Amino acid sequence: GEPADNADSVRGAINILTRNELFHLSASRVTVSTVAPTPEAFHEFVDSRCALAWSVHAVRDELRKLLVPTTKYTMVQLRQGLIETLKKRSLRTTMIEVTLIDGVNDSIREADELADFVSEITKVPGSNIICNIIPYNDIGGGGTASSFRKPSMERVWEFQKRLQELGVYAKVRGTRGDDESAACGQLATSRSRKQKMEEFEAYADE
Image 1 (cartoon, helix red, strand yellow):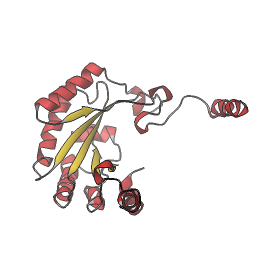
Image 2 (image 1 turned 30 degrees about the vertical axis):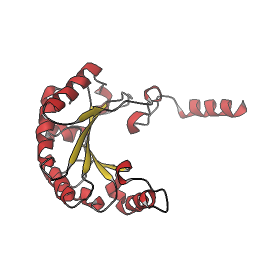
Image 3 (image 1 turned 90 degrees about the vertical axis):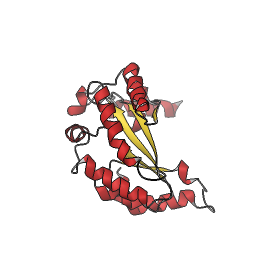
Image 4 (image 1 turned 30 degrees about the horizontal axis):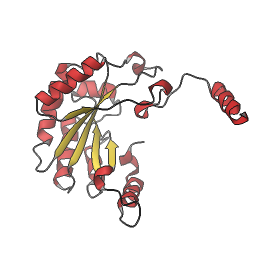
């Protein structure tokens, strides 16, 4: 779910994970990822010992509205919310997450727009911006997403190369769970509930 919608519980979990007498994880090993439903969403974690990740996917407002239908603010408004939060944080590492979809947001144009968009965030002293490029996982289904397809790796690498040429550190996330349609949080299956139950019962009988 969206962490900003359950901020108290998420902050509590972060505290448990990073307290020395408990799990003792480094703050840099804990990341909270948000789509930023509001500019204030980032501020919910201003004092939390974690890195922030923003699921951006596109910076052009009309395109992001297509990809993130719940969007109610412009990307400039949301970016300003992140900038104001980073200025008050001690850990200023931020991941900008972009799921690339074939023919939708994987062109050089989108890479150029993203680099220009991120340049304002990098002006925050001590900021460390990492662009996390995620090839889309084709899971089928209905609605707008039914037409979405995974881009070729050549397109993904071209996107990454362009960002790096423009001074943005970018890495490509390896996908896992493609065979089960479970990669990158996109849990889905075309098998029926009955079939899954039959498989479970067969496994239990072994």
